[in-house]
Image (cartoon, rainbow, N blue to C red):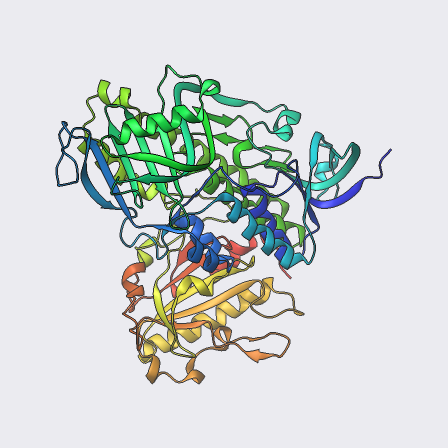
Length: 601
């Protein structure tokens, strides 16, 4: 019998969900391993859309720069319709086939400080894998390792320290046995973990078949380097430029009379030519292609004993055209990883794990419903039968932008979201349960203009952002000092004595004005903690809402809806979702909030 290997967390499947969770775990020093059936890293194909929210996630990990440098930036969206149909605007058509009817911003202005990108999932995976290995100092993924089965000992699961999940796997013909405290099943649509638990995927597959291919096109189609939605008498085509200067992805409607298994590359080439006619299209090279039937399915359960969790395609599958697959899967891991780390390090109660299910199962269900409507919108037959004009299609596409950008997620009240006890009017530009948006502010210590979220890194800390107004006013200054005394008590209640004072709760101060006229010694010590092995006072937690020397005014107070004369306190989770909003004089309520899930010292 093979000697079992004990780990705190076993991740089955090295896709987006598993890798993103792995980054959290590696950064927190958790003993984990990823089992991946592929013989090596993903090389090509699969997802490519990186929505704004996902770019924000990478920024929180400190990984956005290579993403922004290498990816295609999606800035403009072009709509094309049959030349003999209705539409408005100019275009390059009117010559028998299709014409451009409209341009639109790809992302709603002001929705995010980061853009929508297009980049191969292989590169996305590589960035996450490299960061995991850097943080942990070793390889984290067992390639060529196929999961065979899984069992949960429900009695032992009541003991939080028990390795109550047993997983069998095989590599190179040799059996392996793992015992884990927690397991993430992120092993794809045909998940072995899900099947071993007896969970079902509920949903259906439509008759609609689409093809997808990554190509180097030789064409006179004028919007080949823009995201373009093309509707013609021959069908629908979605054009997505890729990284580099020449690679393009085409999503091609093939219709209900086509069987996915019978699709050939030649058919995809021919259909794309017909849709883009009268523009010329020759394919110099095809690097990857596939065909698929559109379906929407949702797992009937997302966990077993809150010790085994499903993520990614293992629990939700849908069409790829809205660009949600990789993004929603990655955010499953983003939600789960910090919670696992907090529980395993003894910082939070095991009950915290229940919020992964309550939050992500709801998001997955919303995704399935959105995708059903989105898929119909892309169907030529459905639009014709329901009288949807090119203008209607354009308007619905643009209206869905907030959702497809990943910015419509709202988590309901739980032990880590407290809209019911929040004073939301104090920060009317924020929504409790939704992500904390960024604003440009000026850092007090060095006059550098920065995005505020850069001060909220994804390192498992909680963040308390205090909007204290203008402390040149005696009343505002006195209010800030009263708040700080209460805040120190809250921080000390949950922070071990042998770590930096900001190791558990990161306190940030945002003033409304007066940076050059406020002396540092007027700032309470809770916002300038002594940190690092050198025991140096940190000056990177104080910001001012004003214009920089070479940057515009960020108007942070206006963006967040905070009245400087009243101020506000905003509690932000490690994954950047707003947990609670309270008044400056109600800091004591934070002790009760944190005490609901966090272990007191």
